[in-house]
Structure formats: structure tokens, C-alpha cells
Length: 396
Image 1 (cartoon, one colour):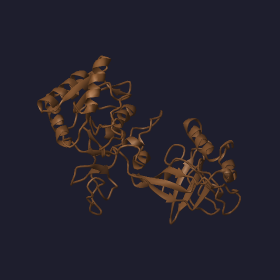
Image 2 (cartoon, one colour):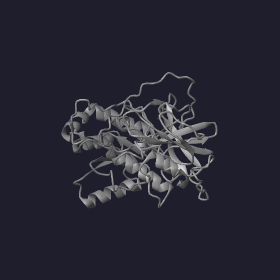
Image 3 (cartoon, one colour):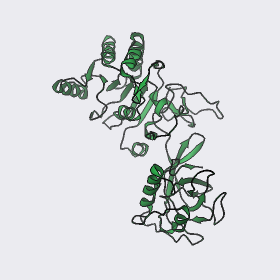
Image 4 (cartoon, helix red, strand yellow):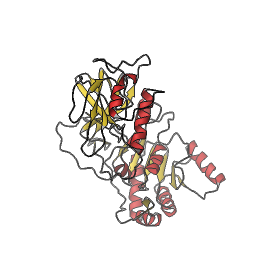
């Protein structure tokens, strides 16, 4: 998603820190999400609704088309009523709203006759209103899919639309992170912590903690600033922009982890720095599947080896990326993408200066043929693999 936004195919998302927070600390969980009845009771509070609507209006004065995702039918009605009391046209849409009535409301919304829609249980999929330029998250959720669907309603392009503002009253960004980095959880995954972010003191934009300049207003943060503890709404709705680096060399080596299976370590040489990632060739299940996908993209038609040593021996079959993209991830940079020159060819892995393509198997960095700690020979070649995953995690 980040690359599509940077390329101009999707609308940018920005976020501001609202003062109003929805308290769901006493709401239980069932089937992976908040219990609907308890959630609605906790969120649908008159004072909270009034404060949240006031903030939405304040932040959205220059915006034309608003969506409010609510926590229950009554909650959505009360939100719409509060908008009306404060002079904003707002209608509600629910799952049981008759199709003709729903179509009429959405058509009026698209024409600008209705400024805001308050929804419960709908408008997350199959809803196409490109002009939406403000999304208010009044519906806390533990479902990453629902979170992405709600925020994704604001990514469509429209004439005169510069970006879409996301106001997260529900703590969803804190729970799931930037939407372009959301990954489905797998069995055994631990719970994640809060994403590191900060708020611009000039315009209240929520940006990544590692940013030195606000992308919205240009404010330059002082050097060596004390880290700010993130709160429910101080998280970026999009991750930091990626940086593309030319790859000058790639090497592969065996990496042994005490008590675990070996993996293929790929090192990319990019000027004076190198970046690593790991491909789990000998693992099983999801990790093996990801490694297989990685290999097939780099060596179509060539079966993936079953051992790391065999993979190193066959590194010359793999196409080397001409560039990799990296982006901040906590204290490190992670590899997030690859570019391949269509004219690039693989080079025999046995050659000391080989630069074939092993990108689908592991991360690479320029290393000479040498021993690596707990491992065996390293081969200069190319590898393409997603960084910092169970298959091909990557760090500087």
C-alpha cells in the first residue's frame, strides 16, 4: 500500500491526535473481537459522543465527505443526532437498511448533499465513495481485517482530494499498527506492543517516532529528543516511506541457531552499508511455504533445494535484485521490497565474484567467501526475500 500511495495510485492517509478516547478496558472478548453488546454499552456514552463529534467537526471543517464507524446501532444513531445538533447533515446506514433507501442515502452522500455517514456493520466492503476525506474510528476492534477495511475506505483518489484524515478515537492504530504493515497473526504469535510514534507540536499530526521532520507541516524535530511514550492515538496510520538502495553485491551463507533449524542468510551490499535477511529453507509449514515462494520468484522452474547447503550451491541459478527498499522498523531498518533489472542474468555461484540471484531465498550483503559464525561457506550471489519475517527476516 505504501508504494501505491507513493506512486500516486492511492490517496495518502494522515492522522491527528484527538483528545477524546473510548474506554474499552472492561469490555470482554469473544471469537477474537470485543463482545458486541458490552462494546456498545461502553462506547455509547452521551458526553463521550458529544466530545468526539465536536472534535470531528473541528478537524473536518475544510473536508467535505466524512465517514464515522460506530460501535452499535444506537451508538450510530446518537452520533448522527449529535452531528445534527451541531449543524452537520448526517445519515445512518445499517445492515438492515432497505436497499433502495441505502442507495439513495449513498447517492446523496456522493453528491455532497449529506456531509457525514454514521455506520454500524456496513460500508467496510463494497462501498465506493472516492471523495471520502475524513474517517472517524469510533469502533474499537481486535480484528486486523476490519481495521484495514475501515481505514481503506479513505484511500480512493478523487478530484481535489489531497489526502484522507483518520481520527482514531478507538485505539485501533495502537492495537494493529500502520495499515500497510498489518499482517495476519499465526498460531503461536505473541501479542504486539504499541507502535513507536510521536505527535507534531505544530500541527498535531501523528508520525513515526523515527521521523526527523513532519511530513504535513515541515516542522523539524530537535536532535536527540527524549522518546515520547505513545498513547492510544499517537500512532501513524501509515508506516514510514521506504528508501531504495542500489545493490552492488550479494552473498549467501549458512546461519545456525542453537536449538533451531539452520537458515540461509542473504547479505546485500549497498554502498558502505549491508543489509541481511534470512530464508527458512529447512523449516516446515508457513516458513517453508514462504521460502518456497521466495525461491520460485528468483528461479522459476527450478525446484527449491531441501537444505541450506544445497541452496548455497545453487545460488547461481537465482536472479540478483538491482535494488532493495528499506524502511525504519524500531531501532533497525528492514528490507521491504526488491527491483530486478529485466536484463540481469545469474552468475555461477562457484565464482568468487558471482552475482547471481538468490533473492527469493534470503537477504544478501557483500561478503567474501568466508566462514560465518556457526555456519559454513558464504557465496557471493543475489537473493530476494521479504525481510524480518519467519521466512526471511531482515535487519541492518
